[in-house]
Image: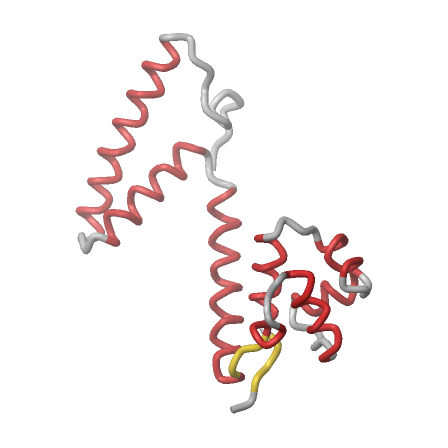
Length: 150
C-alpha cells in the first residue's frame, strides 16, 4: 500500500512539543519556508528530512506517513476543523459557553430544539454566576470587561 507524508501529524506533533515553526525548522536543518510548505501540503520531504523530524519529535520516522487513501480525508477534515476552531476562538466567552452547551446537548442525542433549550438554561446559570461574582467584586472572566461580542 502506498504511503504519503502526513503533514497534519507533523504539525500536531510539533505543536504538542511546543516548538514554533522557526525552532523546529532550525532543529531539522531546513528553512522555515520549506517547513511551511511541508505543513501546508505544498511539497513532500526527503527521507533524510523525515528521519531528522522523527528524531527531533521523538517518534519513529514511519509514523510521519499515512496510507495515501487516508491522506485526502485527513486533509479535508483538518481544514474544516481549523475553520471551526478559528470561528470558535472569535466568540465572546458567553457565546462560546453557549456553543459548548449546545454541542454537548446534541452529542447526548437530543434534538436541536431540546439542545437549544438546554444551552439557554446553561447560559442562564452562567450569567447568574457572573452576576454574583461581579457583586462580590471578583474580576470578570477574560473578554467580559472589554464588552467583546461575537
